[in-house]
Image 1 (cartoon, rainbow, N blue to C red):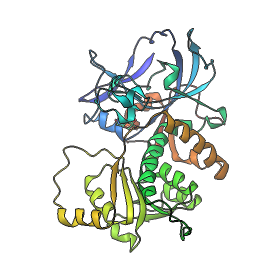
Image 2 (tube, rainbow, N blue to C red):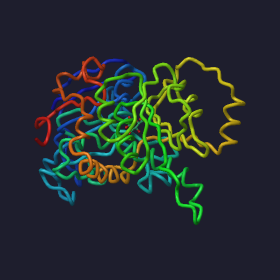
Image 3 (cartoon, rainbow, N blue to C red):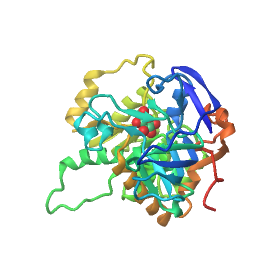
Length: 367
Ligand code: BGC
């Protein structure tokens, strides 16, 4: 089968012909339809992140996936050929209490693997094999957008974490809310745009920021009733506005300091971007930073990965978005390219602004 392989930490990626993985007892064989490309893939291809499986010198790339079941072994119940599936990414360490409770996104030992990222082969290949526990069945009606479910799962977890912290205030009896909660989304890549969709759908007033004007992201934000602001000249472009919830997806350590400053009293900043460990040092007024955090009940929360629960919430939300804004989610897919174009897509030479998808089998979408 064809597969895109990398050799972390060496930069680069190549198309290889590899043996089809054997169908283990209790497992399901999946033909990959589409794989999304994100900043993590770019970091792996440029030698900044990622790890091959133990004892192997290469890693099959790809973690944002959509596939179709083609074969099931005896003991793999609940799946039939033709079912559409999205596979989760992280596989638990098998030892800590979180991994043993199917919540490997909170693994305590660091002994987890992540398919296509850290220590386990991914989905940028014609086929993969997986057990039902890690496969989420997708309704046929979501065929055109389900490749976004994995990044959406990451967003669902991040927002759930932020909401938990916001909810620590608890409603005051007898005092109904006087205004809608406000959210700022930093970045209009797929993570930021998906966060804007989730938060709009939950009744937040949403502002999304990036450093451009006139982009497809800006038009899409208008469609869902979110505000767009160009902050190329700094966050001061936001004026006096402050936000209850800020979701960050850019991985810029420098930007993160600025985001603390735009939190409303009692506000929460959730960080999902993974900064470069070699980013140059930054000098901050630590006293002012922590003083503000304490005196305004601020919280800064990190959030990584997502367990199956958030894939399921994401699936329900994809259906809700389609009902409320028909066709809008698919506009996040800026381009679909054949697998052979992997190099240009991974390096960002083609792909557009929101989400680039590699089509591996079966054509582009439901239509
Ligand atoms: C993936 C997550 C993963 C994280 C860190 C993200 O791009 O979507 O599943 O946990 O990278 O490796």
